[in-house]
Length: 449
Image 1 (cartoon, rainbow, N blue to C red):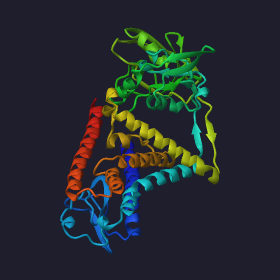
Image 2 (spheres, rainbow, N blue to C red):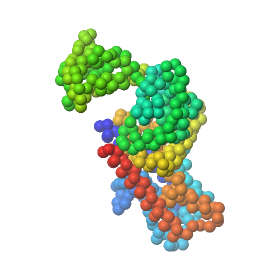
Image 3 (cartoon, rainbow, N blue to C red):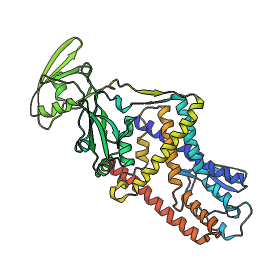
Image 4 (cartoon, rainbow, N blue to C red):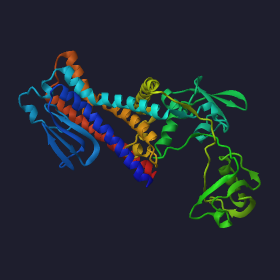
C-alpha cells in the first residue's frame, strides 16, 4: 500500500507539471496564431489511449509516461516530422513567425514551471506556514555516520555554523556542505566552541553513499534522549529477545545493568554484548522484569522500536496572504539556485556525481508512504523547478536547445539550416535517452545494491 501511494502521488504530480508545461508552449503558440497539431499527455508511439480533436488540435493521452508534448506546425521537434518542412512555409507555421515570437513559444513551458513553483510555494506558506528544527535547538547534539566522525565530529556536538555562517535549519547542513563547498564546521562541545576542518573528500564520500541506495542513509540526525524506556514495537521472524519472553509494548530500560539514556546507545551496548549473555531489563506496566538469554556473535536482538521524536522545540513561521507572496517567491528563487548548483556538481567529473543521478524510482521514492497534501505540494513545486532547469539546458531536443539556436539567429540574423536542425535534434534525443538510461540504471543498481 505504501508503494502504491507513492506511485499515485508521483504520477499525479508529474501529470500536473507536464500538462501545465506543455500548456505554456500551447498558450504562446495560440497567442501568436501558430497552429498546434497535437497536445498530448504522455507519449503515444504507435497508438494512444485516448484522443479527440477540437479545431486544428488533437488532444490525447499516450501510453508511455515519460512526459508529454505539443506538436507545433512548421517546427522540427521530437516527432521528427520532416515532410512538412519540405513544403513552402505557411503563415500559421512556427518557422514563419518572427524570432521573438518563436523564442517566447519555446520558453513558455519553462516560464510556466517557474511561475507554478512560485505560486505553489506562496500557497503552501499561506496554508501551512513554515515549520523547521533550528540547528541550535538540537539540545543533545547530533549522532552521525562515520563519514562525519572521521572528520572529527563527535556524538553530542551541536552544529552552529558552516564557514562561520550560522546554520539556521538543521535540515540545511548536508545540502550546504554539498552545494556551497563548506570548508569549516563550528560546533559546541562541552560548552566550548570547536572549529572542525571539512576535508575536500567529504563531498565525494557523501555522493558515494547516495549512489548506493534508493533510500538515502541518515548521515546526521539530532540525538534523541530516552524518556521512560524504549518501547518495543514488533519483532523479526527470528528474535532471541522474543524467545526469552520480551513482548510488544515492553519498555526497555537497561541491558546488562547499563541504563540507556539515548536511543543511539542501544546498538552500541548490544554490539559490545554479543557473544555472551544479555540481561534485558524492561518495564511491563508497573512491573520491572529481567530476561536473560545468550546472543551469538552474528545475531541481533530482532526487535523494532519507536525512537521517539525527541520533543525538539520546532520553529513555525505563519504568513498572511500578502506576506506569503514575497516569501514564496524567495523560497522558489532559493530552490532554483540550489538546483543549479546541483547540476554544476553533476558535471564535476572529480566527484563522480553522475553515479548518484536518479530516475523515476528515486523521484517517486521522495514522496511519503502516506498521503500528505502539504508534502505533496512542496515536492511538486520542487520537481517543477527541476523540470524548468533541465528543460532550459542548451541541449538540442530540449527547450533550451531551441532557445540557443533562436538566440544565434537573433544575434547573427541567420537561421540554422533545417538539415542542421534535424541532425541536432537527433543528437539531442540520443543524449537525453542516454541520460534517461543512466538515471534508471542507477536506480536499479541502488535498489539491488
